[in-house]
Length: 177
Image (cartoon, rainbow, N blue to C red):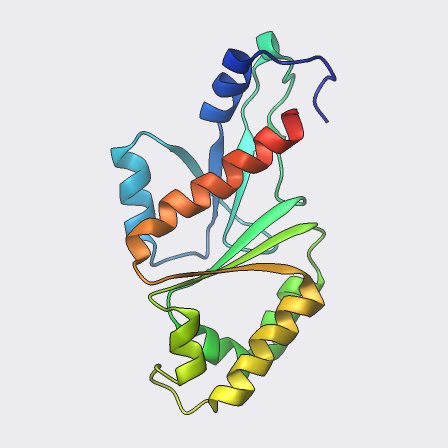
């Protein structure tokens, strides 16, 4: 993937700072994320992703051994749901589509981010749908096990862009070491 030379700390930092967050073109209501990225000069690019809402790429940097743009959407994806209500709909109304999205992914690292909620909200039924809390919890844990998901609940969606960026940057750091 990368040339196997040892990178200095400053070279690694330069590569990690150059990451471009990939945003799926169907991801529509994400102003809190793009506004944060614009404000903090985080590069992002919108394109059609086969699975997930977010991934990462590295732009060409011949000096550091990155000979071409490198896309990682087949390696790492992050699916974002804005609430327990939205993911409830995925489990009840569009379950086959939601299942197919994960089952066709080649990514060996998959993240599911649920905004505006905590795990406690899910367990206690603190959401606005008719979905039985026991069934909801069972569906979430089943998907987690079946697709080896990393689950993250963020009560405050304003932390989502930081979380997404951190996941992608540390994935690249992991690959560089």
